Length: 315
Image (cartoon, rainbow, N blue to C red; front, side):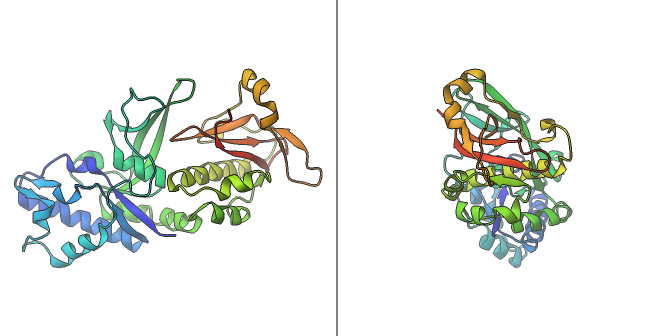
């Protein structure tokens, strides 16, 4: 499956002290992108104003593109690769909203909104930066995701985005990129058809079939795949005793007593197996952005988690 890198617009907030340094920054960025392309990343997502980025005083990226002092192959490479604009093409509702908006969610890096990192996180791909500040000299960047849920509860989650501003950062992620390509799916139909291959320690209720097959939004698709991989890894490591949900990267919670009383019928789902037993699926993880839930059950015991529902919060 084709993957794209995502440009971190925050790395362009610092200008180079002179044109010579700006050329060095661009040369390093090109080397980083060449390494990423060599690992299989096909293009780069950027903001609409990408070519207007100011590298140094009176030296925007558009000037770099015609600078005779710059390697012609580097200029051609960037023109060819930076074809995916704007940043959020094909990603429904991926926006940075203000905290005052209802049901908002945003990406924050040291208090600054970080749209590029947020898109990279949702698409589960590599963020690329100018090596313009010490902050970007890292292969992993922490991001704060904040959301107000249906009950007006503020949910804050710290996540990690794989990142590169140097060639060696890309090489550090080479195995991850290869695995990400192997486990990537184009849509819900492919995800359902490959479920046994990808998630050997999960069982899926019949009703989940259509819920997964209908997934087309790449942002939500990757969120579903990520949660399923987390549960599959947790199930594989569950050898005996009760399942320790603290080992799950995402926060898992049970439905409140009020919701169980109100939606017991909707949360009671027929399970796979010869007995086709109906079980209560109270445990769930949230998916952001939005109000989606993935409900699962652990009644089968060690090594097998059952997936019963994937979709908007049951109301």
